[in-house]
Length: 205
Image 1 (cartoon, one colour):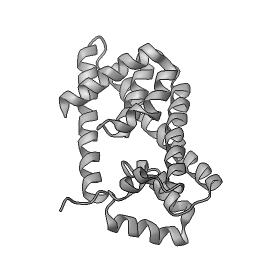
Image 2 (tube, helix red, strand yellow):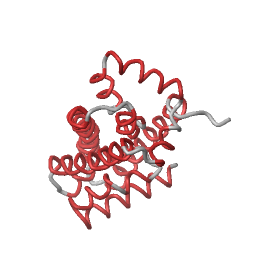
Image 3 (cartoon, rainbow, N blue to C red):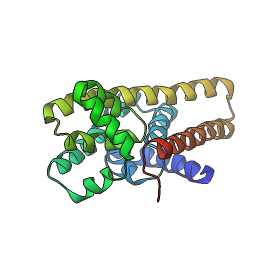
């Protein structure tokens, strides 16, 4: 896990430096969706990297939001069309978790949709769940968009906070600074992965 996150952090830094804002869009719309590292780690890293290499963090955040929403709406559309891939993805969710979402959705659809779009790992399945439960597209777009914006802001602010605090404490020690940051990312990644496996995904029979 240490080697994987260290490599991805370095790759993401090089990638953003080379492709800038277009690269950020493509990363969160496509590349990030098929990597094993939790999305939250990438967003924290984006905040950290944006400040470190001098990109506008507000613009980086908006581009990341647009990238995530592009994928979310594609998954929502495919689910409405009965796509086999989205059905297969939905089948990976623990039955008890899905039952709880459906039960809460009946009386508090807006709140349930918003919260689902904020929970680590479950956020990926939110548009599929919305499509399965036949949420109207304008409603999905508004609620999911608001939740995604909030989600990106929170995690990017964490990355910016880490960068500012580590820079203050570890001036002139870039290697140590990045090492401390990557260690924190590993802890977050492991925590999210374990919680998601235990609470969201079906256990292997």
